Length: 357
Image (cartoon, rainbow, N blue to C red):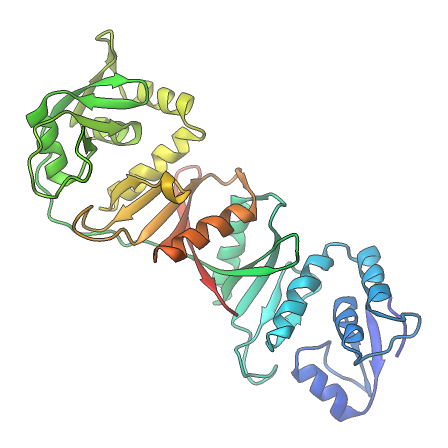
């Protein structure tokens, strides 16, 4: 076998051995009794004692060479090795950020790869726009995308990511009564009990003050507390009018300024809130789950919220460990984690699901 270089490692052997390596996902198609492995593949096989490479004594030397030639591939190597230990057939793509993962039990050539795996370091920031582009790319190829998040101890956690196109929820709604409220710091309070109670009963807007777990269908004649996101949406509908403590009217733009002042990314989150409300979902805060919103199809007390939502924008950066944490919480409470990315003129969503490859 020839030594490793920029183009990898050229191996030679009998046709059957080379054919078996190819079917197991290693290297290119054998020709004339030879085949080429990538440096990553060679490093893995050297570590298993299945390959000797001229000029490379052990896996440490192979990885040093890999790091010097293709430093970004070290993270790929960690994920590649983990998938191989799980007895999965996986192919290294040198010119893309992906590893191609074949269905369990199938060999290369028997079935097409169905998943593209993207290695991510848990503490290396990535932009949501870039993640969305990866999800969309996989979708165009009719494949599933998997984020492989690597921690500092080189443990790997896997999440399947796919575009989420909500059809919306058709629910019977009562007409919304017109109300007036007062802006108090980061809330809007409807002090008139009957008005506020009617608004909550109509479609679960806000939270009746002093009621721990309001029951659906009941009329709570107590002040109603609205979040700024709810107030902005209701003002847009023409249902709610708002004044500040001095009696000055607060229109939608003033409320947007307030939410941007008091909430990180407030305008983006207001867009995401309005998107899901317009789709028919009841949107409630979900800070206790480490995300922005949770979505009900019917309403609190009528069903469990099936989705947790993280709001973002294409240019925002996120640490993959934040996705990992939110995904673990969503899994533990049997909900799907949805990331809603609000760009210019549209909102794109993708859904994350924890998997064992």
